[in-house]
Image 1 (cartoon, rainbow, N blue to C red):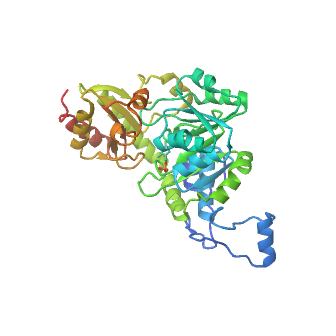
Image 2: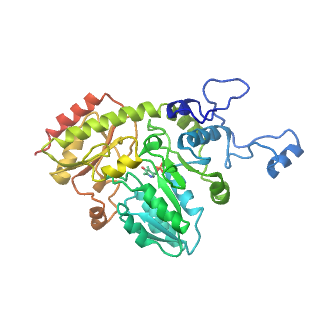
Image 3: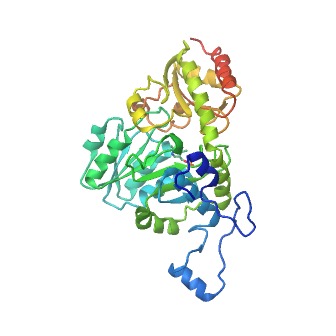
Length: 394
Ligand SMILES: *Cc1c(COP(=O)(O)O)cnc(C)c1O
C-alpha cells in the first residue's frame, strides 16, 4: 500500500484485505469471536505473540479495514472505530483524564460534545473551562497547572466559526497538554489537524463519511503511543466498538467521499453566494467566502470551503420557519453531510437546550439557519432557495 496515494485513491483501496475468495468489494465479517487451531495458538494470541483477532469488542477484520483506511487518509498511525461520533468524542477525552485534571474547551461545540465536557466530566472530578476559542489569548488565560486537554471543533456548529488549530497546539505543547480536534465540519479532505499540530482527531462518521444517511459511526485517530497508553484498554473494557456491518457501510461510503464532498461544496458555495445577495438575508457565513470573519485562518489551515452554510434571516424565527417550510428539495433535518440537502433552525432544535445568553454568545439568533448541501444538481438547489425565499418577506 502506498502512502503516497492521493486521497481519492486511498479511499477506494486503502486498508483492503481479501479473504481466500479474492472478493472485489470488502467483505463483512459479522462475527463476535474467532477460533484457534490449537490451545497453544489461543495462548499465543492472548499473550500478543501472534497477530490476529480475539473478540469483536477489541477489533475485527471489517473494522480493521475501516480503521486502516481512515489512518491513511488522516495521516495517523492508529485508530479505533466507535459506534457513534459521541462514543469517539467521549472515549478520546475520558480515556486520558482522571479526577483533578482540567480541560479547556471552545464553547462553540456540538451540543453533546459540550455536555461531555461541561456536565459529565465534572461529575468525575475533571474540571472544564469553556472559552471563546476564536481568540488564542482566551486559551492561554484559561490554562491551569492541571490542564491536560484542549478540545475544539473547527469550523463550529452551527455558526462556522474557525479556530487557529496550530496556535492552540503551540500553547498545548508548552504545557504538555493534548489537543483533541473534532474535525467533522471540515471533513478529512479539507483539514488535517494532525499536520497542524493537534494530537488526536475524532470524527462522527455518521456525517460525510457515511454520507448517505444510513448508520452511526465514529473514529478516534492518533499516534500509536497515545493509543496504546490511553485508548487501548479504555476501548477494550468500556465497549464502544462499532458494529462490523456499520464498518462495512462506512468503508463503502468513504469510497465516494471526495466525489460527494466536491459536489456538496460546489452547491454550498453557490447557495452562499446566492443568499448573500438576497434582501431577506442579513448575513451569510461560509468558510469559502472572502467575507468570512476569519478568512485569514481559513486560508492557513483549510484546503476547501465547506459543505455547510450558516445564514441569518432578517425576519427572525417566522422567516426561518417560512423558508424551511417552503423548500421542496431541501428537507428539514438536524443531520448534516448527507447526500440529501438538509436545513435546520438551530435555536429551536439542536441548540434549544442552551440558555438564551449562551446562544447569543455563539451568534445563534432566532433568524439563524444552517444549510447542509447534498449531492443534487446545484442549479436545482439554488432554484429551490430562490422560490422558497418568495415566502419570506424582505
Ligand atoms: C454529529 C456530530 C457529533 C456526534 O456524532 P454522532 O455520530 O451523532 O454520535 C459530534 N461532533 C460533531 C461536530 C457532529 O456534527
